[in-house]
Length: 324
Image (cartoon, rainbow, N blue to C red):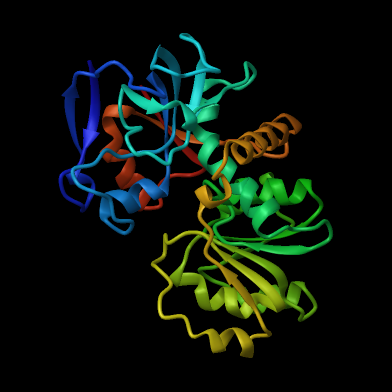
């Protein structure tokens, strides 16, 4: 038996409901995974609210850590009792246990505990592909990171600093400024009281930055445009401040022949080799101390609706882990 979240309609946290299910034996290519910790991510809110459409009824959550309990036919490379993690793309991580494709699992190293893995897999792999395989950031570049104390933001800051970039981070409070600085930010800008683009130009001698990481979306789109250097790249990877729609590509020309991309994690983690190499790089950076998962708060898995409310209200910091 397992308990799992099911949504029958999209909307606010109130659509989250728990149901008891009896799990069948895992099918071919599947394993049954008993969860110990589940990661909370803003993409979960997008699925729940309908920003990213899902087929209803649907489970929620993509990121989980646990132990293999049973193997389906044809599964190799895993054994009962193995510690494993997954970050999707299949939904259904908000559960005590589930059957999941073995192809979506990765073995966890002994030196990474369950809570750390649940806090880090999705956000950390997102950071890896954004910095190294999407933007190809180079040592010596100056990079702007919006929401530099957020779940992905603070990992971006630490990773960028470790590879030799100069990091400008935007924050909303003194507390978050301290967090961004602790992660490695060279400069912080208070977006509520300062003109971010003007400050970026001041910090770069008027040049602007060659790369902007923007996980906010519509609310920061104009700021990103105004902060980018000629031929700069804006990496728009989230919609926390609304979706960017109706983009006039002529604006990219007038701003200096800018490049814009809206990348998706699983286009960069599409093959087993990409998953293997990306996660290996992630754990390497974790061991180096370049990134710190910074679990800001934990909730019991059964209180996931409350966790969603806190996340949407901006009342969380760093990563949130749901403990089973």
